[in-house]
Image 1: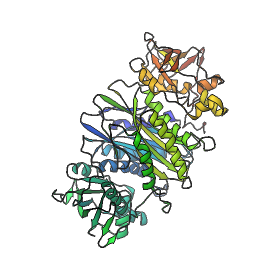
Image 2: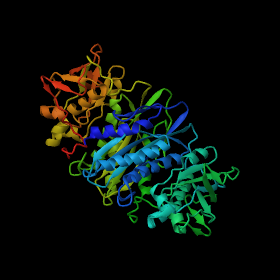
Image 3: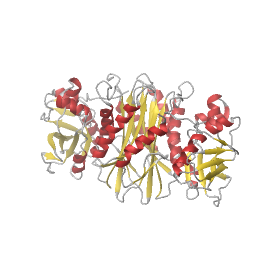
Image 4: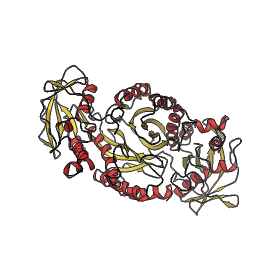
Length: 304
Length: 304
């Protein structure tokens, strides 16, 4: 199959998801989006690489497609934004079956439909290395209302959604709910939107609580004190909950005076600590310092 | 060097290029862009893959960085848009020197500065395969004025900018002006903007005139008749001018009544033929049919 045929097939699949403000989608040099008055646009880009973020042995093509978009949608959720469209670049080996590519887009488009996200364009290439997908998701948010990670202030309460460590547990023992959590993460898009006007800072937990909270504190120039009351995923260990990546829950802070319900947008919320002045980036857990041991793609000691 | 350090270094490099409407750049879950009233946004995404689009033996890291962005800017030019920002995802092997990554961004940012394009974000990953970059460029254009490839009408004159086949010649004989053309393509951004309100359709020549004109005609539901008066790059062959990719010149159509100067935005313009009714996608050259033999990344017979 040549590129034109393949692009045409993807275009036909993508069409039902086309949205009103998407003036032009797949097939030209660029896609065209017409912004609404009073909206800010947010953009995220994430790789999904074979044997780094998924394995053909354990992940179907549809799982890979789902995960590629879920990672991007989770970043959109972290900004409190509404997803609008995505661009998907996919490099596959010459011997990859067209069927794999087809199923990849099916998995991706099923999740896109759920979140009303148009597939607006992308690139296709043959490449010898591992299957490599790069996805960009664009979301929109009312002007000035995006949630950032640099807004945490001393005295703010620290909260997380859902339970932590499930994805790490699933990776260790690929079965049951934990494996499902690893295989098909659910981006907390509705929750992110519900946090606008409440949270002072927010980010998604993609690399593990210890590393991600460290980043949030460093960006906000504050430190954190955890009180040990973590929502641990059933069966997961404390280290998995503290350092395990890919939970795609939301980590956020809110002033003590702001009431945060125990359940928001259908997801349980747990208060896990408080923001303190000084020592930017440091995290205290009981009387110990919690080191940022989460997953760092560029740390040489942590080859996947 | 870990990801945080590397991202911090890239962020510092990128800062001088930050633009007014870029509310938030590298370092959060998403970048934030505030659209101006009355603008449409255009988006393109392009891979740059080692041994497909560049070789370490012949391309410095800075050359690769330049080319990654040039390919995206060329798509922005083809829409008649003004580039605003880019997102750059880069996957490199664990043994790639940090210096390579540094120089890649230097080459990319030098071109970005020339075109006032902010580096707003991206992703970094370690991956075994070839060095793989995926770039997204966003441009803006007054509402409804984007140039598309589906607007060519019977009777429109067909024009190209610059000279064709230089990049293919340079690839064959890596020296002189032709090699420079291959190594450091110049996206026709100013020309694209000058064509707004004049051209009925436009695209950039990335895969060769024969294939790209075929695509333009197919999108517009018309055919083309070339009169053989091609602007051939000095020293290049006719097949190189007809089918050689990566010239990154603009191919456009305009009604016969619209005066197209011989030089626009400093670039020579040549009329090469006329658009005809019917036979969508077909191209006549003298009395022969010109087959679309340009570069197709997904055609199995054309492994790079």
